[in-house]
Length: 225
Image (cartoon, rainbow, N blue to C red; front, top):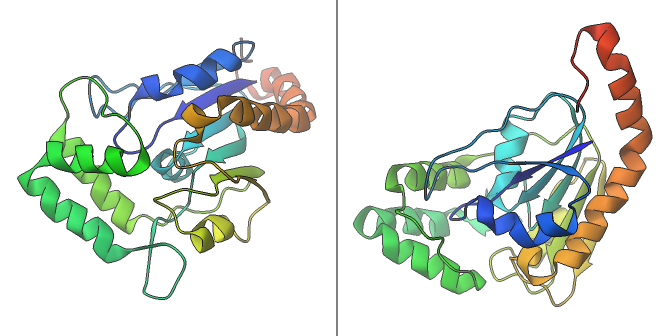
């Protein structure tokens, strides 16, 4: 069973280095949205688990791979903004970022990373892609996945309000884990906890993965390596 890693807005594939190193016994497919270099969209055959961070969850849910069996959504969500009085980040917050981004992309990136305790990746930012996905962040309402989800959240997340963390993926098959001291960068802050969550879901889905792999030749699908 392969792991598909999908990073969030303002990051690149290198965000996953600490967590991927702790899951080296799994096959990896690591995407890159192209915000700071060449984009990479891996083509997946066979059963997989999506390991997503923040907006990377929306990206995967909007176009899930055909063999998706489960999702470990770290600091993740299916919807970021919400109407007034509903769980989520106020739309005006993202609209303010979009307005500022038109004047100073570098300034918005720096402020965003400062807020969550991150570091702007190396490389030249692709302002068009980043702005496009800011608009998606404002508007996207990804469908709930029809597979089990582990929602791993940080209790001290400066970006996602508590009610949003507690309610995301409501109505789906979701198991919630909270790191009380964690923020919005759990794959960097506590990669061991994240790896444990991935291994737990992989163990739970192992029978389904084996069945999918066994059925692949009969359906004409090439089994995963």
